[in-house]
Length: 129
Image 1 (tube, one colour):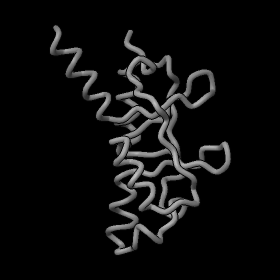
Image 2: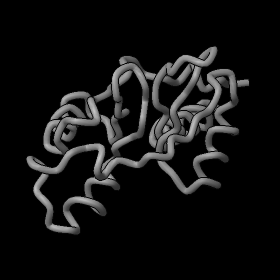
Image 3: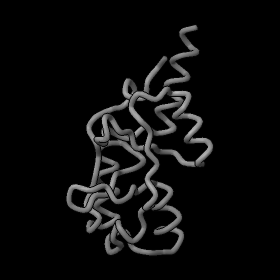
Image 4: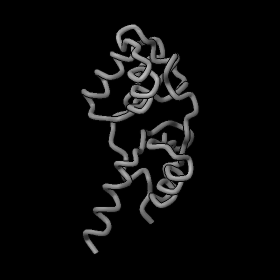
């Protein structure tokens, strides 16, 4: 069985909840990711995604340089265990209608799995058959 942990790409990308959306977007661009974990101290308090940027900042004509990440992040974080199968991850993404799952390995955040990662997994799996 193909496990989620085998398809994570390090490092964990994160930003403080007090930073601006502009700073979050710069970091997302640097690491070429569509989502970034949001922290307060050592705790994860949300996730900021491209969808948050579009729906909660751009569509409202707010300014990324003065909008604080904690004001527009998604507070509900959906987790999956690192030992779960890629099929389980895909089903969870689909049923929750989300594009990113935070992966935990022994109760510690190990990374973020995106729908793009799942698509790459399936392309690779079926192109080798």
